[in-house]
Image (cartoon, rainbow, N blue to C red; front, side, top):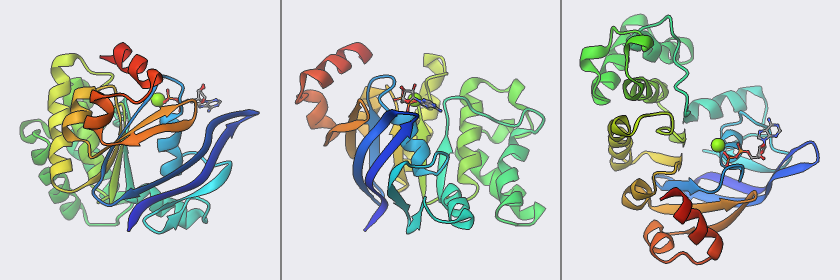
Length: 242
Ligand code: ADP
Ligand code: MG
């Protein structure tokens, strides 16, 4: 039973087809890595999955909810599909704890006490027990991104979408974010991850998609595609990111 079902999706800006007929089915607990050249449509695909963008043609069904559905349905999709961006987008005037409490308080309608409890548990989980009362400006990039992950998890999503979560980080801070993602994967979270961290994709991924020019050019096991790239296109791409 698939948790994400994409059928015949086209995304067009003006007269340019950025996604050109995507069919893709992702099962619960898959760890799908999405790689491809800049401009190939990776971010657009993620944004269509959680209905931050509308699709021009076709449909995406997330956990039984259609992105073409009404407002309430789209709102539910955004809760079911947590999203983590390259830029952490934390509220600067709220502490780490308050940032994580925000979702449960606003959208899940829980009490202040319960929200604090959920948020504390998640910040401990991402290794920020000692930094809960800090403001984003007092946190390192890696700590901010881990707070952002905790914030997404706080509304209990069924799946997580990551758009280059470590690209804005110095190399020595990437590891701590990747560790949190690895742990989530081990706990059985369904994840779709856009990244240039090829080694991480090989280690953690159950599936690898290579997007090129708005099309899924390859779809297979990370190990197979990476050790023996089936096209010159993928081979060249890997030489550039490695
Ligand atoms: P990637 O994440 O793989 O680098 P994107 O999904 O961001 O690629 O972009 C794919 C293509 O769509 C690019 O050519 C980009 O310029 C174009 N694009 C993205 N967003 C918009 C937008 N809001 N309006 C017009 N064109 C866009
Ligand atoms: Mg992108």
